[in-house]
Amino acid sequence: ASAVRDKAMKTAHEFYAKSDPENVARLRMKLIQAGHMDPGAVGRFFVIRFVGFLAGAVGAFLVVRWFGAESAVPSRWTFIIMSGGAGYFLPGLVLTSQVRTKRREYRNGFPDFMDLMIVCADAGMSMEAGIERVSKELFITYPSLSQNLQLVSLELRAGRSLDDALKSLADRLSLDEVRSFATLLQQSKELGTSLSGALRVYSDEMRHKRMSIAEEKAHALPAKMSVPVTICILPVVLMIAIIPIIVKMTAGD
Image 1: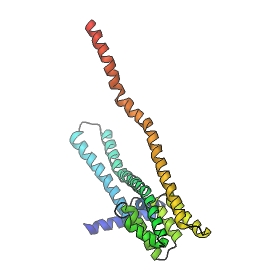
Image 2 (image 1 turned 30 degrees about the vertical axis):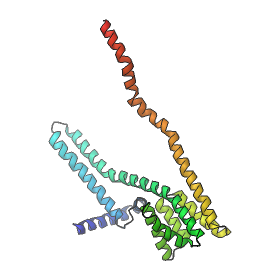
Image 3 (image 1 turned 180 degrees about the horizontal axis):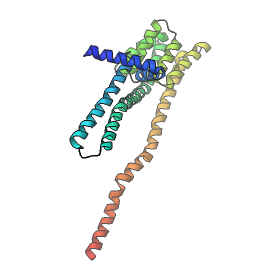
């Protein structure tokens, strides 16, 4: 079963890579942003999407066969096709949700990464050694961020420059803060400014930005709550106000 699954994943990956390489490249980056870094993730996604389409269509067919025998034929096939389409697009929606969750983890963990990098810089450690050390310290609280930082350490050991490794990290995390961090290191190196001071200022800015985002969401909450409050509470209030009047009018008659 494992061999058949691996062959199906490989075949699907090769087929889509030849037919639509740009879409496959975007999907590969989206899978990496969601935390799926293994090479077979693209093929697995296409297999899951195909299986979801079949499962949705077959499930809808069985439901129609058992419970919808009296329904019209066009409505049956419409329900089957829509169910298959839902099964086909469901993996994409799940992947988007995973990317959003990972991005939230990265955004919450990056200020802590900056604080630990400040400690490493003050202790006299190089940037490469600091990244490797911090990646181990963040493993428990932010495992996905730690995994990406360990990949940066491996790239640096393989001879890749720090700027390129950080730009690749920014693409994997899909955060503008990481791109700004890479620019900050490059400018600090060119201008000869204090690295720990620049990191400390940037860390404070990131925390201020995160607090501003939280305040923005808090201020938008009353407007978002107005719709469910109107739908759920207003009818009850109207019923409480109107029903006694109706009862009195009925009793009077």
